[in-house]
Image (cartoon, rainbow, N blue to C red; front, side, top):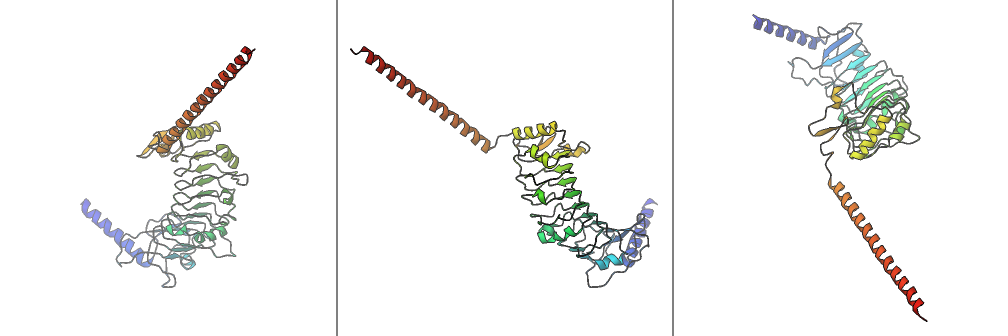
Length: 359
């Protein structure tokens, strides 16, 4: 009996999902004020989709269809203003993993999640005002080209921007010049080799730069992040860091993640001692996973480091050998100099005694 009930339930779900896909209506059980739709094939300039949506829907969430009876790819190639208008101009949109190649920001859109797509273009027409406060573009590898990010500067109300996993190598010079409300910025898992803090908005409270290729974290008198509380620099190529200069740049810093960098033990100890002295945490005590190290890592003073952290590298051995050679040379020089001086002293003393003995 249970098996028959399960089969009937599956058939009902299949029919409902298929009917919703054909008529493009909200799936049964959608959240209050949120319409859940199955993805479908959409190419700008071709057939305009038609939807049957409740008038009070404020947000649209796309999901993969339960079945694909038409053999389509279910790819919304572009989220443009035509599609936005057909959806009754929602204030929030979540369109993930749909191979979307471009998005056009609508003026009334306040929340947008376009993560895990193939977006190469963010269209923000000029001379308009935009309500967008939250934009998630994580894991869109085609955003690596600087020109793909330039238009973001027009989203003046933006408060959260996610750009992790986008293979970004360079940040456009004027990308943040108008984003005076931006509080959270994530640029993790990119290919950044350097960062200019003077480009970043002073309104930031959280900044993630972990899993990049930063070899230094430049601070200067011109770089000011007066509201920054959370900074993550894990998994970079940092070999040293000036905590005093960092605190001058970010005086309100409360959480600073520094692990998984090629720091030598004395350098790391000095950094952690200074952070402790200033009551700045270097791991998130509210998230237990933040203290869990990987398979090839070691746990040291609350920080995860590479497993060879305690092992001496060939460069360290070379430094010790050079130091030893230098010490030997120094001692040899002192000994040689002392011998020469001793001989001269005896020669001078012998000469004086000889002169005294002569009549």
